[in-house]
Structure formats: structure tokens, C-alpha cells
Image 1: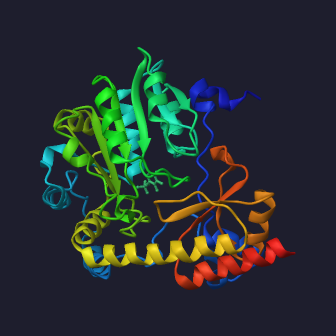
Image 2 (image 1 turned 60 degrees about the vertical axis):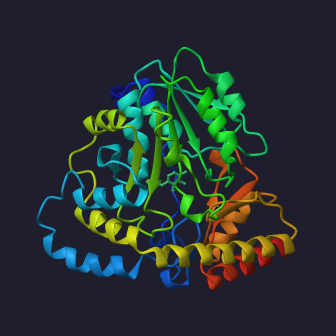
Length: 367
Ligand SMILES: *Cc1c(COP(=O)(O)O)cnc(C)c1O
């Protein structure tokens, strides 16, 4: 029998599939547990759910589901344009912001190009790089954070794209604004910089990104944002990129015409305007982060200070601890595939979920 894997080119065969958080239903099947007894703190989802206004709008929008979505996301585009004071032509919508990362790779990369990103950076960067037949250049992290001077040194004539995650997942590290802006000044303008800001809504007012105001200065900058995290719409899949209109035009050429479904467009539009929900999500995350980091400290565990809605902590034998947590119905995320074999990442949940995680963890470590 022929080896069917040979049908795909080497770059595709070499891709390590993305490992997501284990779904609640899957763990329930595997362990014979009740779904209601399982706590999932593995995918940085919003424990408050979604905006109640978005939920109402979704119920209404269901009546139109037999229609194709608006391929230009007109209403959502208008809302994003007003909220962020960018032109409509500067926005590209994606089926999640993962789609934006992939569209950037498809639009700007070809075989032989080099793409720079950090060690411990979001797993989708190497994935879309390899799928495009380009070569990933990994810059070693410094104390888990991006080494931007190291990025500059890694630039070669083949460099076409740079991915920067700010804050980064799974480390939660944040690059200070002056450091980031200095970096952008130094990057040659023929190299596209994708700045992934999936967690911006979880930053304090002082830390929040100013990168949108930099777009005019840096024509090679793409900022990606998502509705999956603080807006609580992970299951609907919608995100967007902000950039120079000329780059948006190129990205739209490789975009599927109906990549953002109609429910996602409706929910995202309403969510964008529900500032109260985002404020509550931010406050709940602050409180939950304090609860979890204090709990970890009490257990004598070290962790990486995080600016996101998750925190990675260090344990002896992370694989075994993860298995023991799963047995007790607590799902966190192993991050060995991020070259962090001694860490587990826990997403910030509701007070009761965080408490359950800490209680089960304490029991496991004490036994
Ligand atoms: C969660 C996450 C995203 C968002 O993914 P979506 O496709 O929008 O759900 C993007 N970048 C990083 C770093 C993330 O952690």
C-alpha cells in the first residue's frame, strides 16, 4: 500500500497539529464524569459567558440563518471603524483572529521566506508559517518574554513577516509600549509585522495598546484583535485585523468570501458596544487572577506574572499533575509543546471554579 502522507508536500507533513484545550464533553466521556461536575480552565474563555445583549440579538438573528452572511460585514465594519477611529478599508475580518494570522501568512509568504517569532509564542505562528512553505526563525525568549532586539538581529534578506504577541499566550508577558514602538521604528518597512493583541481588553487603562494610533506611521503593521476572549464569543469565531488599506486589500484577496458567519457578525457588533460587559469581564479577571496567584503562592508554587486571563505555573511532573487534575474533573492546559514542560496554564474562571481548581491542586500536591 502506498504511503498516503506522501501526497502532501514536506512542509505540510511536518506540521504538528494544534493542541487545543480538552472539551468538557470529551473528558466526561473519557472519565465517566458528569459534564456539570467538570471545570474547564483550559482555553482562556470568558467565564461570564457573553454579553446578554449579544445573546438577545443572536436569538433574533437566527430567523435569517438561511441567508448567506454579508461577505463584507458592513454593519460590524462600521462599528469597528467608529470604535477604533480607523477607515472601513483598513479592516479585515476573520473567522476568529486565527484566520487573520493565516490570511497574513497566505497573503505575504511564499516558499523560502523567513518568519520571525519568539520561543514560547502562540502556537499558531509556526503552524501558519509552515503551511505557507516558509521557514520559522525562533528567537529565544528572555525570562519568557519576547527579546525584540534579538528579533532585529534575526532579520535576514529572506525575512518577510514577524509575529509579536502582546500579551503573549501562554506566558502572559507584556512588552512595554516604548520598547515596542522603538522596535517598529527599526524594522525595515518591507517586512510585515503582525501584532497579536488578543488580550488587550484584559489590560489596565495604563497598559492598553496604543498601536492603532501607530498605523499611520508604520505601513507594515497589522494589529489583530479577537471577540473570543473578553467578549466571550469564542464559539462563534470572529476577529479582525487593522492595517493600511493596501495591506487589507491584499489580505482580502485570499479571504474566503463568507468567512465570518452571520451570527458572529451580529453578536460581535452588539458586543462591541456593550462596554459594561467588557468592564465586568475585566473586573472579574482581576479578582480571579488575585485569587489564583495568591492560591498558587500559598501552595509554594511559582508562576509567570500574567497580563492575560490565564497564568502559567510551575509544578514538578506537570504531566502527572495534569492527569490527576483531569481525573478530578479539572481541565487546565499542559504547555510542554511550548517548550515549557514544567508548567501548566490555568485560565481565570469564576470564583467557585478557581476555588475548585486550587482545592484539587492542593490535594494532588499533598498526596
Ligand atoms: C486566543 C488567542 C487568539 C484568538 O484566537 P481566535 O481565533 O480569535 O479565537 C489569538 N492570539 C492569541 C495569542 C491567543 O491566545
